[in-house]
Image (cartoon, rainbow, N blue to C red; front, side, top):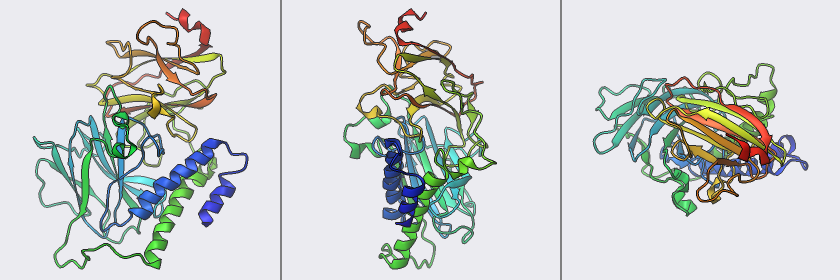
Length: 403
């Protein structure tokens, strides 16, 4: 309750716009699920980090993100099945405090490869794979097995280590939009489970611990740290962003209507970004009569396993894509994609296709009428020389004069 009061005083205010309240309520919902309802490290569960109704940390419709709270007091095994993902990764993060901000990556394994750790996930001929999560390496691994290292027992406190799994799909229909029912969208087409490895002579009860003052208080502390670290401290405009040592990543443009040159997340930012990802982003600011023309090149599928662009609000939450608004494109969704990967997007408050006959001609990014927001690109396992997009603001009425 004290943390909610602090957020109300330091992050919210009577003058706060609706996006501030939206972010805070989404954080509360996500934090309750991750750190209170399903926070038993003796029986971890993979929980959904975001979906069309719960948005956080550059969420998007082309991927499923899951997280599990674990402990260095136990060893675990993860069993999964490849179900058509173009990219899978499992990343172990160290947190600054129980439930708090992810301060650094401890280990990672990825499919079809990991560009950072060299620990590749290789499913068998039935798509199955297994990850051993422990402080000591297994004596031997089968071809479809890999090892994720966690710190030795007792070196990190409760809630200070977690796993995030990422499952990326690049289809003509985005994975989060395949089904209409939100409850079936939570983990669409993803198969992965995590279990504690029972040790000989283990004293672990076959039943989960009953609620006590201590374990309930601990989970509430995790939730409190999660809320404060992702709002007051590390949200855009938070205390950390005002520190003299804070640096804006080079891939993020601070100039309106300019998108930064793509750059690797690893080494440029903290938090729960994927080690294998390149980002590019920048803010838009458009008057009602204006449009932003975005020209660029997507890398080929051989050079980059996944690429997309999506619109976000100032707190890096996606806009309302679930009801059919045109607010994101992956490479299979872009119209008129050139053989060299060239494309053109039009960011505007109204649909430039409204007066066209037949199928849509333009790749419209729908601002929802918002004067400002963020354009955000992702490139997974990229090997290409990524170029900065070119942008220009024009009058909306002049779109028909474009070459």
